[in-house]
Length: 223
Ligand code: DC
Image (tube, rainbow, N blue to C red; front, side, top):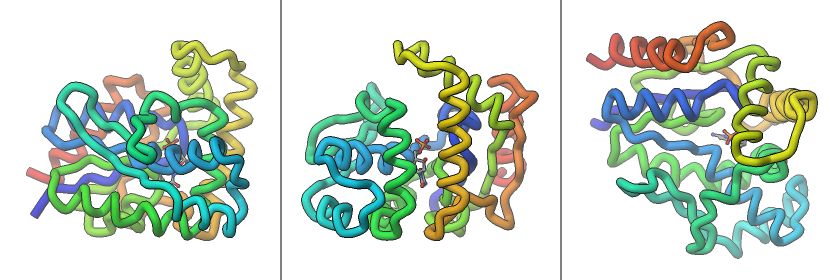
């Protein structure tokens, strides 16, 4: 049986960077499921589809193909209708559209099989919002990674500025709070810790400390 580690938590808690580093350390394939919702969000933006309209999104899903691929050199890539859109899905606009569109059960259903299939054949550390609760309920290790909204906004702000985005901490904090609200209050697979998950709060941990805390929990449960 393959090893599966589920890492869930709110936006900006450091899930992706921490999970990627832990995956490298422990030999687990890092899978960022948010990239899939972002790809659907990008498709909606490109076509002018209202992300809250079930009918419009349903029609969109029939027209598009979303794939995830892994390569030694570029790591995880996402393809929209065969086009590599990995570099186009990290803007604040795509973030918000992904959050809105992910509230629709048809979108969650559409992406479910894809996520489960990856974990069927590979040892994974998969990050998202509902990995421990819905996608991989039998994962051997489930971690809920969180931090205060302010420290998450601060980290996200730094990332965006490094990528050349023009924004302010205030705007990023507003987006973080709005996305938290969306992700936690939606009816379909809301963000919440799985009952058997371990809570890791990274507010007062630096990156290395967060990686060590998560790696330790996994080692204890898997060895
Ligand atoms: O992890 P992220 O910020 O890249 O995710 C973008 C959006 O996708 C997030 O606001 C909520 C949604 N998402 C989800 O609903 N379920 C997941 N497993 C991953 C992401």
